[in-house]
Image 1 (tube, rainbow, N blue to C red):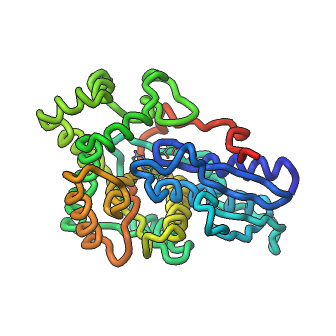
Image 2 (image 1 turned 90 degrees about the vertical axis):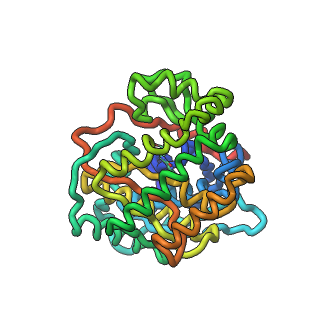
Length: 351
Ligand SMILES: Cc1cc2nc3c(=O)[nH]c(=O)nc-3n(C[C@H](O)[C@H](O)[C@H](O)COP(=O)(O)O)c2cc1C
């Protein structure tokens, strides 16, 4: 594998999505072998307790690399969590020339195009054939599946689950602090940034921007919460966009073992890339699934809400754990702003 092939595999991995655009990956090459680690400085706290979000991002990153490498004519031998004593060491990948010659991988072309779109409303419908194409991508990863809530009862239940979790992100002081700490207000509303969430990517309407910005202060959020603001934000950030979009599905994993979370990240990425090929816009909602697992140390007052999320998610898409919802639809144009990435050299594992 030449240097250019290695560099392009890394670029494909770095193009993967990560919660709050945290990019929690570290890479180390040794010959044609690559180690993927979770970056201890960018993982492990609040919603990422037990590394659920980082494992999802690592799975997505790995899948991008595998798909891209295949288009270059390389296959991967993957050992996941190769060292029991090092929980940050997610995968060891040995690349070798594929037995079949390099071929064009339809999903590879979507790696750089894929992005998060938080705007709405979107057009539809999403036909059964497209839904099945997306579901088939999830099934490519053993044990993983995609579930489409379709009946009015299921859609209503899914909406309630997502709205409840999104509301909690503004009600819980810990989750509120985490959410706003990832937004880079210093970049302004017109620019993007190489790490974290640029305000321009959040689809906040111009008149609402000063209020949204003020809500980053815990005291302001607390005061506004007396007026029901968290509930309003739950409707604005989840209920309305989902009601006004033609598609909603959820990635379901068989267990909450880290291996399965990583595999869920791989499945999520395949589904997202296929959606991109199909011209669909995507916004993920990870809070319901992550909070329902019971690892996130929310304040005691909110524990019951998290348990209820688990019960409702089981009812919706059990057996297994619904982990990431995806809102989908056809947008008229691409969003003006996309999240940036750090320079590739910054992902090197420190010696
Ligand atoms: C595990 C995971 C969870 C995410 N959760 C959310 C979410 O709850 N809400 C949201 O709007 N975006 C969510 N995202 C999207 C990220 O914010 C996005 O991928 C990141 O900002 C990089 O932007 P990009 O996808 O446009 O490259 C999530 C992404 C991942 C991988």
